[in-house]
Image (tube, rainbow, N blue to C red; front, side, top):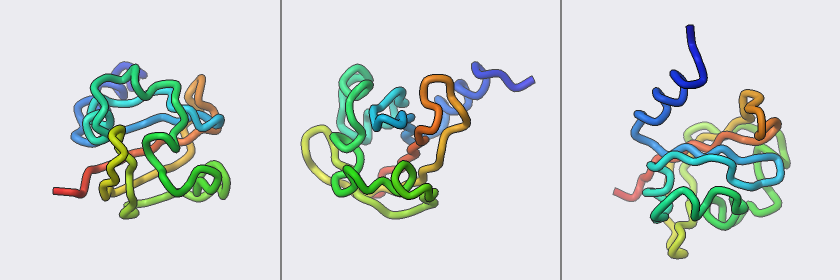
Length: 115
């Protein structure tokens, strides 16, 4: 049987960043790998903050998922790190799977492409 715990365990072991963003554009959850890519020391720094502060420097009111209902698949994009620097990432976004607090939000997956 697939449980929430099993899914979370599998997700936590994957070598990429994942951020769950609510419909209000606030970061609800993030993997440690996402914090590393965003140059953040701990999850508390980004959880509860608006996604535009860390993830999408050019899409503050033009989100492909929340504003246009589109999915993003393997798109090269730019991520704004905590220190203000911009790095290229491989980006995937889609509506969430009805996560309890993030219904109609988006799941943001990122892979650092700067190396």
